[in-house]
Amino acid sequence: MKIAPITLFVYNRIWHTQKTIESLQKNLFAKESDLYVYSDGPFRKEDETKVISVREYIKSISGFKKVTLIPRKTNLGLSLSLIDGITEIVNRHQRIIVLEDDMVSSPYFLKFINEALEHYKNEEKIISIHGYIYPVRATLPETFFLKGADCWGWATWKRGWDQFEPNGETLLAEIRKRGLEREFDFQGAYPYTKMLEEQIKGKNDSWAIRWYASAFLNDKLTLYPGRSLIRNIGTDASGTHSGDTRIYDTDLFDKPIEISKIPIVESNFARKEIETYMKGAKPDFLGRVKGRLFSLFQ
Image (cartoon, rainbow, N blue to C red; front, side):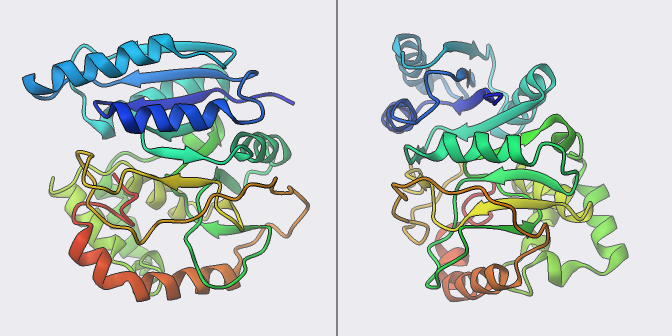
């Protein structure tokens, strides 16, 4: 099995970065994985010391096949840095695993992602693999598909990332042309369309709303685990784009997720459960996570 490179995007949060790395080091396949770390340059002078501290830490880590630090000379911002870094690595390796500096993983995260990347590598309908799932009340299937794409601990192939459309205006015009606003918004559970409108107006710089819209408009599917293999520790107001909320907290699943043959169609059951969860959490979404989409989308 071909092991995909891990691409990690960091900035100035040393504690979060350490927790992300430490959990990855405990993963099966970590020692067989190349790790690329993109470190954005400081936006403000007062961030310089923190950025340097994170970079020095990255230089000290082990436990992977190879660690490559890519220090940015200037501040590109999360969106541009991530789009550029993903494009560079996926073009070089044909597949990629993407993490940000606040994503703690289960020891079986890399196993699930790599096995799914291999299993579905020739399935054009499938655009990506995702490691996080919301803490819904129902028991979800072992694995299932949803239309679109997501951004907390995910992976894709070059053929998948080639579908990415960076122009928000193009995406929004097509959604409106086809009358897909309500479906795009998970039947009104969350205003993704508004988030895309705000990205176009420069009110947010979300790469992920464009990734989701690109996959959605191309009628592509993402594979999810029924239990979460990622826990985000960054929704504590510590990040540039994150609010302070606990509605996404979930326990990490400490057993392997089995990749098996399932119908390559969207799971109506899982979609409705997530819609219900979003609707129940909406007041918190709107009031406490300003600037995020799901608090995931920046």
